[in-house]
Length: 190
Image 1 (spheres, rainbow, N blue to C red):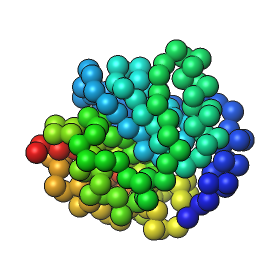
Image 2: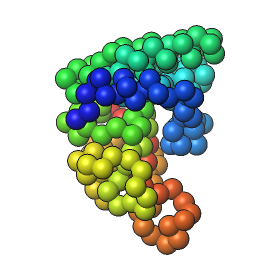
Image 3: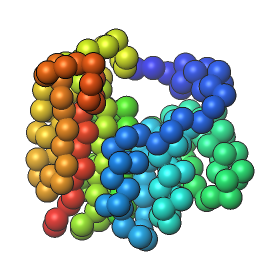
Image 4: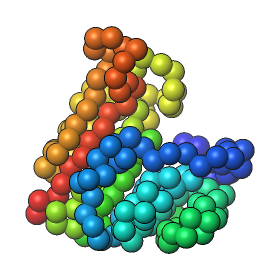
């Protein structure tokens, strides 16, 4: 596992704010018009900012105080409110029935799967996008522990109602499509 110091060093060198992840930006029409959202392992918070722009009470948790400080600065410049917390989500996962939307991008910690499910309020939505082991480029983590097996994201969240799922692997023309990652949108119905 990468240490907080290593993450801080990575974020110190990043100048530009990244764009929100594709699963969120392509499916923004599914977002509720009000409610509380959480961007887990938010990094520089592009997704948290996007959720705030869409009217949600946006929260961003990360392991890096450097990333969170940069996020706060960007939010202030954009006149947005994003509540940040320096938090190790593995040892301190979100509380039960707290969020209407949870977004996880490029982060995989299987131990908190049930915590994420229970942290959703009834009818809450989970947007998830992360790297798969079946890939066509070398982007993403080198350690397969931090990459999804085939259809694993579906299995991890099978107690939720699946709204959208995408995982293209190495099928067909690998120079087209959405490769190297899986995407999921799911809803807690009870």
